[in-house]
Image 1 (spheres, protein in one colour):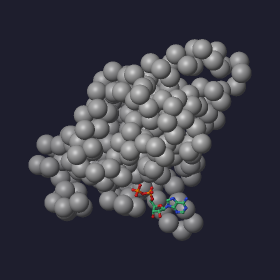
Image 2 (spheres, helix red, strand yellow; image 1 turned 135 degrees about the vertical axis):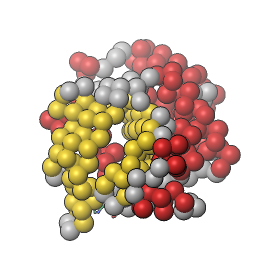
Image 3 (cartoon, rainbow, N blue to C red; image 1 turned 45 degrees about the vertical axis):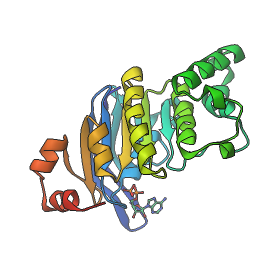
Image 4 (cartoon, rainbow, N blue to C red; image 1 turned 120 degrees about the horizontal axis):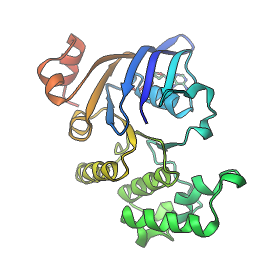
Length: 241
Ligand code: ADP
């Protein structure tokens, strides 16, 4: 699904968090939103998900006006920073959640849901964890479950907020490779937020550098490293994170 954002602004009280965002994402693209803390990355992601509402601007997905669609009709897969798994549900029920809560007319039969969940757990290599609760999992395993839950609804767009933020370096590297292969297998348009340059450049087709509620530059690693568009980008790229 292609996404087009035009003239988007958002403020919280007196703080202007997004100051006019124009962005086009191609169908099937893997895009990183990169920038320092407080630059507006998560807010932009939440607006696309329908979890926040912009003050002005357009949001179109495949040409359709998304702001007119209720959040639940957008069919977004969202992976939260802290996984936000349901602690009282086993892994298989966490993954099934998005399908089990659909309105009856739109809900697959129980056996169908179970088959989808089994397939996903095998794909994500967490089938041996099916009957565990989140508290019995490692951080990396929780992240896979969170991704499984997001993918179960066959999202039109997959959004990830600092997906590996809480994990240690070796697991992050592992999961990066793995997210890339999940992306190649599913082909869904994917946007992830990070403040980690290495992660952004290694994973994404294009990187959107955000600063202070604006897009400072969009490009691949070479373009942004070799030709930073503004002093802010040059400083940010030179900064050790
Ligand atoms: P990033 O993801 O780049 O760290 P955010 O989008 O989370 O940035 O936040 C941008 C700014 O908006 C920050 O100054 C943050 O404090 C503020 N902000 C985010 N959400 C809210 C909210 N619900 N209410 C008030 N201020 C908020």
